[in-house]
Image (cartoon, rainbow over all chains, first blue to last red; front, side, top):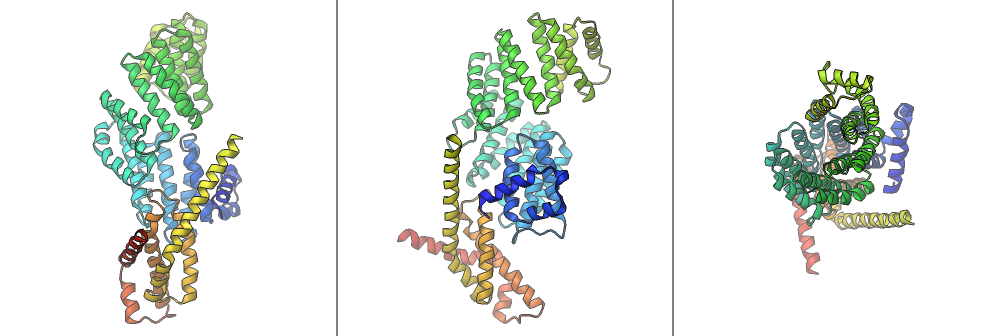
Amino acid sequence: MSRGEALMAAHDYLSTPRENRSEQFTKSHLENADTLSGIFAVLKDRGNVAPADVLEEAKVLYEWLSAPQHRVGFFDESDYFRGESALYAGASTRLVGSREETERWLDRAEASFRHTINPAPMLARVAYIRLALRYDTGRYDEVTELIPSLHLTFGKLAMAEEYWKCRFLEGMAFKAMGNLDQAAVAFEDLVSAAQLPVDDGLKGTALINLGNLKSGQGDHEAALRSYSEALPLLKRANRPVALADLKTMVGETLNLLGRKTQAIDAYLEAVADYISIGAATQAAYIQVVLAEALLDAERPREAEWQIAAALPTIEREKMLPEGLAAVVLLKESVRQRNANPKALAEVRHHLQNRA
Amino acid sequence: MEISDDLGVSLSHEDDFEREIETVFRETLGLIHIALVSHYQLKEQEATELEKDLFVWFRRFCYRPGASIRENRPFLLVACCQFAREYQKYLVGTGVLSSDEKLKLILDREPVDVAHDFSRSLQLFDFRRSDA
């Protein structure tokens, strides 16, 4: 089977809803190692767009491949594919937020990859997710200590994507630690990409962060230039989450520059994007930020709509402690059609700290 | 027209990649055959069948990240030795094949070590190629 045919078979499998896949249908697709390779290639592209979906698919694959009666391909291929499914499940679980479960998937991935003929590149990929997980839990000093070695490994293996992901993660850790100069160097390194080619999505995300650093240093015009460079890259790479983040940051910078109407438009676009990708909590947070900007621009009615739209999500998803006085006050003020700016600012502050 | 142009580029890149896999496999096939027939004592027909499976595996293996096609040759030899060893051990274990001293010796060795010895021959081959 050619690579093109394998990808077509993979799309056939993945475009069939999971509940409609018969045992025979699943078997005929997954027993074919070429199709399975194609399925992982497709899932790789979807990882940043639909992590929840990739997680479900990866779980199904891992379970199927782990059944003793299912052997796929030759030599080490069963172990390799099982490792891939566990790695994809781990990477996706991390993105949708469950840390303990991520660790477990990574353990499974390592256990399978250890039995393959050339485990080093695969184990390095697992190590990267482990470091990303440390970043998520705020262990930034561990990330900056350990990532240069992994960065070097990926360089030696000529794994360009992972090589740059390491540099990006290092930059993010420096940024979180307040080491802004080193963070800027890491992001600029990625934008210039002198060593190995870098993909548009990652380059665009580095530009967003570079812009964010410049905005934080008061150079808002330079920040907007970075953002406008990032926009076409992220569109080309189909990174809806990063695009929504970008619009949020553009909104923040325009707000700081006093360009209120443009800032509101950018926030509105960000909210619409977050809603369309199912990131409800992020949408609710930006609606609160947007409401503040609307009040500031003396557009109280629109501000109340945004608050009214955000509150159900804030409560349903338990984004703030139950019974928080500011939330109660804000709800009441919206009911009376007289949004309370102080309560709104307090709610935004709590949400910001939570994020 | 943009879509078809991109597709053309990607297809031609894929063709080049597939051709390189075939070339590298063909270059290594002589050594693989010697390993299977002379060292692991497979019959000609068994070796030919195994070589077909090895090619299918190697083709997919080259799509894994972390090494160029040429850098993957030592792993091809490891897979060759591993499969030959499992196959012959199975035949000896079930009594289909009787083992002589030479076969016993190679079946007792780790496939990675045997493949490592063969890799030296590959290095020699590369040296000659670059010298030519």
